[in-house]
Image: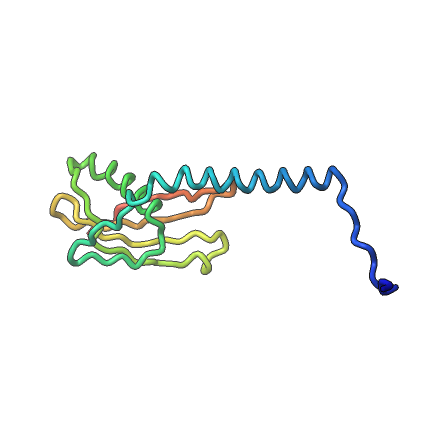
Length: 140
């Protein structure tokens, strides 16, 4: 039986192409193994904290950014001799898409040693990456 004239023969792979494919497969397997080494030991270590009664956070900051802001607030409140701080509520003042530099601000209400304190918290993306967090206490 004759092969059709319109069908081109399958090109043969060169040694360099086969080595490149083997390297890519090896790197993919290495990446999967590395991910497994990091993820498997940490399974079950992450838990969702209980949300206190009356807590409501309507902001958009990630847990990491919230933690960074709380640490800054703790420094300021520490100067006022307070070491027990609980974020009781937070609301967005402006969204990143509403401003040119994609920054946003939130208004946070905290219980600091039994007293309610209010903070304006701003989040500004840095040109080199990351987000700059600034806290400013608002007098009640």
